Amino acid sequence: MPATRSLHGKTLVITGASRGIGKAIALRAAQDGANIAILAKTTTEHPKLPGTIQSAAAEIEQAGGRALACRTDIRDDEQVQAAIDATVAAFGGIDIVVNNASAISLTGLAETPMKMYDRMFDVNARGSYLVTQAAMPHLLKAANPHVLNISPPLTMTERWFKGHAAYTLAKYAMSAWVLGMAGEFRERGVAFNALWPRTAIDTAAVRNLLGGDRVANASRKPGIMADAAWYVLTRDSRTCTGNFLIDERVLAEEGQTDLERYAVCPGTPLFPDFFLD
Image 1: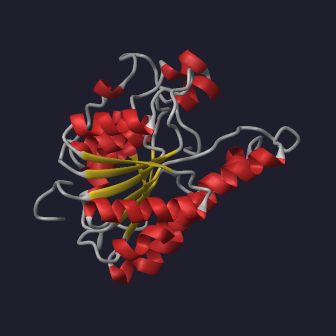
Image 2 (image 1 turned 45 degrees about the vertical axis):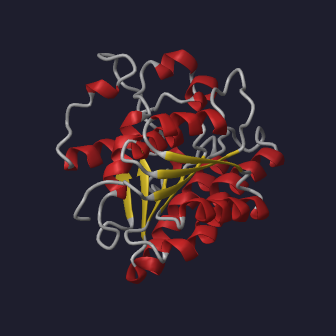
């Protein structure tokens, strides 16, 4: 474990950090005085998708960090490379990549247009691969480099494919990168881990696509994922790699067992997340 457990002075590239879990991870890192590059598309406020790269940058700087708002479609090779180059120019390097951006459609074969199929694979699978690939030359120069994918454990059971196989496979690709790249880069000291929530998290996706207020009120706040991510990203990259981690288990390992403060509505039974038996 690093001698000083802090992200002070570290540079994080976080995709989809204009809202939700990505922004929460950014704000937690900002409390330490980290540098955060926000790679996201939103520059104009949307009624159902609050937050822009500019508003997230302002919150990060208010929290104590330094922010770089990079309007980036992670499906676009040139935009991703430009964002990585801008990050290095602004902060001098890259220590951490958090692949958080994701596209979701819980639809079956007949209900999934190929345009949506392509979007899920282009964002989840290809986008996370592309961002990691572009950042890797800089990660290899970092003192304690980490790549953290917000993706689930690989559980090959019919239950998690039935009715939304395209989304599951696109999301599982992010976890497959962890499995493969942890092995590929273990000897070079770059950690690859996946982090997933035990329960639903109150995000725009939950409120707009996955059950509305009913599920949101039975969820936890994004802060639980942010705190768990902080614990992972401050661990030794040479010993903490190749893991499929669950937020509340990470917190328990760190002695944090009272999780009621993360509940949207304390006392309400929590809605379990996908992909966990």
